[in-house]
Image 1 (cartoon, rainbow, N blue to C red):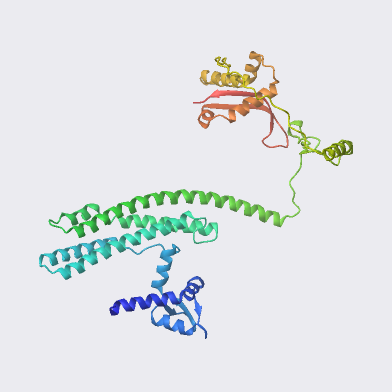
Image 2 (cartoon, rainbow, N blue to C red; image 1 turned 30 degrees about the vertical axis):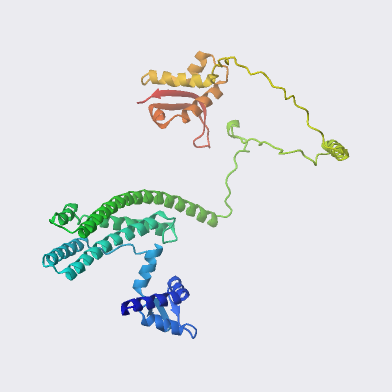
Length: 409
């Protein structure tokens, strides 16, 4: 085993041997050296895995290792990548030119070096963008992302939206036509063409995903702002209740001046089963229980006639469809309102002309209820004008005495 292989294997062994210590350091942010772990910490510090913190005997993970763990766990809060796409494109073009020159001079070692430089540059650029999009999407779509409050979540999504828009501008530095020009070299080696084509495909996919993420961000921000308004109203109400513990909602349903229409009913008293505490039923229940106990054998089920019945092959008679009479009247009333071309149609006049048997108040209630069930486009077409006496002291309540329907569109 060469020296490089042994050095890498030793570094991996150190990471595996100090797994609990490194996990504790990553989760807590720091680790304190004591008599038990001082030797392990000194070894990790010499290897560049740990670094000294602000205070003595306190150590942190180095930036490279922490970013690697953040990247693998998708917990990197700093998803903003410092990517200079214009500089990356210039670097790739220079490496391609150097690679081409080395091949013409038949310098295979130098050509292999430049090919690896091209591969690393393209891979790091696309991988950084992929990681940035993945972490950013995980942050904006989770319940609170990497924060713990609604206001912080809104600020986080606003920053993510700003960064996404900046990333769109940065991606505009890459022109697909220029990337295709890299393939215009006659006799281009297949290994280089595969790397360029893979980069172009990944770039197109990233741009498409970024467009979807920007639209998702705007939708989530709108919902979060609505939730923030609701939360603010709830907090204001809670604060008012804390300041006024004596406040209670008014129960005006028992007042003498309240119309019967607005009075609350006594409610239904439902009994889910037999009331065994009722003395009227106790004697009968006791007799039933005693009779069941005296039975030595359970009651045999009734015999069933298992004889085969002849199959009825006659065609079934046609059953007429039963339609609700008042649904038909509602449809006719709405159709009449549409036919009048802007003239108002009275629901009471229709009720009187058709000689409906229900009371006028119930007919008006049915008209209003069916109107509320109409699709929104129909409610925009037909306007409802409810006329009646306003109740004093009860804002927004009135006794409906007439309903006029009018086509407005």
